[in-house]
Length: 566
Image 1 (cartoon, rainbow, N blue to C red):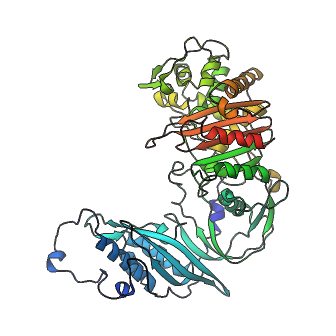
Image 2 (image 1 turned 90 degrees about the vertical axis):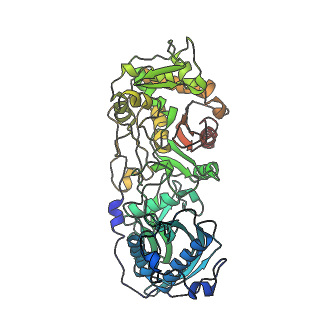
Image 3 (image 1 turned 180 degrees about the vertical axis):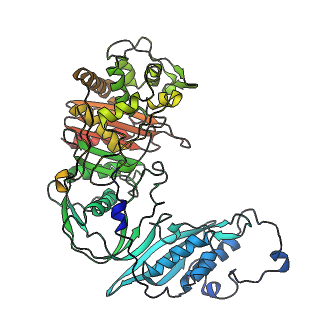
């Protein structure tokens, strides 16, 4: 994964102290001016009875409306008045709260904050913020919505604000902070391959990608920095909850407000504006959808899009790819003469290995069927039945040596997760053969797998040409034999025409190949749906989280992009 921590370091200059948060009245549903400033709001200094001071019972049970209201009042009132210690004491993590609330004034330079609380919904209290950010002569309004949740504190059951950085601002993750100052990186004017400007306003899915480009190329593109309020990511901020495993992500800092604009430098990318627009349409309104389109012969990224826009799952996701991984596994079995396209190959209902009993979807079987039939119908046991013939590291080596995966050395132009195929044994090794176990991928990785099959060799995907900064692209150590490559293309072509990918690929003409996938995930009612395919010199892959079968969910999305590519 290309790291941007060095770049993030340039953003950690702490600006000088200026002013403090002004105290203003909160006026909102459920909260009145008198409630905020008159009477007892449950402050830390409130006297307690002798019985309460002793070893009283730990409070338990659901929070009452009064507990939620008074705790929220106490926190917001103290924060407004600039009483950081008091506000922090109203949370269940006073140390972390005090540090971030202090930085809100000192580092972020927020002044005159006015809070308007909304009506509580259970234990959750929404509130809006209007303030001003000032740095030297530069100033700008700062308005946003946030929320807090009241919980019972561990140990004594007292109601407290459940502390997370997102209480201060919804863009913050735990470990992040807000900073206002000179931007360490000048802005970047990203250009498409045709020279037209690429903006997040026009292509909303590219927000995180453009942030990453600025991180890496801001100082190289020739611009000058402006003044901005930004989220500076902390070490604990890159877990991308719900989208991939912790540690896979390397999330870019985020600009919230530009107090004064810098002069942007220009940076040409490989993105095709028309295809990017098509990708945006495919993920629009689908929070769990992500898709990538590549030029197979070069690795150029022509389009990348994510539904939800909050995390770049297409590049940074770490998800089990399900049966799309069978493309890699099939190449291994073909090379080792453990399978042949048109020879009989076992596809029983069940196969046990390493103490696990594996089965096919709906427990189907193919009697006296060929490997081509098993691949096209995505028979799990056809692959797992070969586990006894394999070494523990065979799949890992195949993924690295032929497909360039799991080497952690791709240099795309922004941060990426480059796939993971760990060496495993017994049942976990068998599960890896069908894209489960410890195997983790994202649409960029799986689009590259299809591209490798189409091009005949691995070409590392890239968003910015290596000639821009002289960086070296990752390479694979070997290619498949002509015989293996031809057989693999035949399998994918047959699947696109007659197998599980046929419905999605109907109407996609020319030299095509495809593979579907469904990946079971603990805690999900539906599996993640995967699809990878190529057409001519284009290769694409997509995932729809909790979508179900890949042919029904991710398939139409990928096929539409391949059609749009002409």
